[in-house]
Length: 187
Image (cartoon, rainbow, N blue to C red; front, side, top):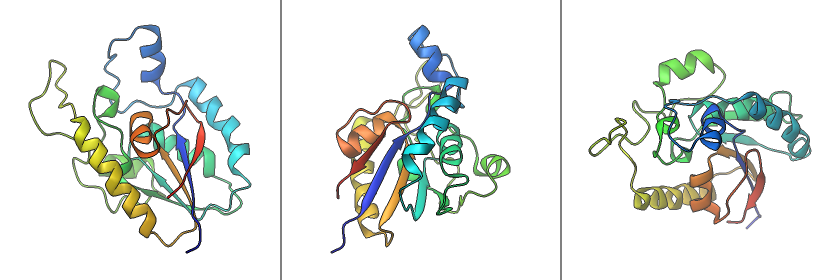
């Protein structure tokens, strides 16, 4: 069996990340976008990825991940296709983890394949908390990470880049990633 290179890339800093760092209370930034610092992190990380022969870019459907994916791979020598991978989404714990409808995302990201995206595609089951958020049980995230790992192993591509989130990548790789940090996943 030929080895696969799976590049796990956490999104750049979001407006939620910046607000949380200043005051660790949910600032109610639903589907948070990249902050100015996050855009800078993405620009710096491009140089790390330009030499990888990435065949496909799989991204979480959350806006900060899609912005990061575009920033990292627009103009990449291999011009990998960007496809949304619903299983790669973040664990719903805060407002930033609640997404937007596929039609809204399609209008903002017309070159992204949203074909596998349901509506809603984020965890929305169980009783909502005081913020109106249905927090996703950790056991579901662990199971989702295991399912995603299996799907990755079955993919035909040899070099796959993933743009996702801290909590999900922790359950997928066992590592805590900083914003725009890149780590390789061994399958």
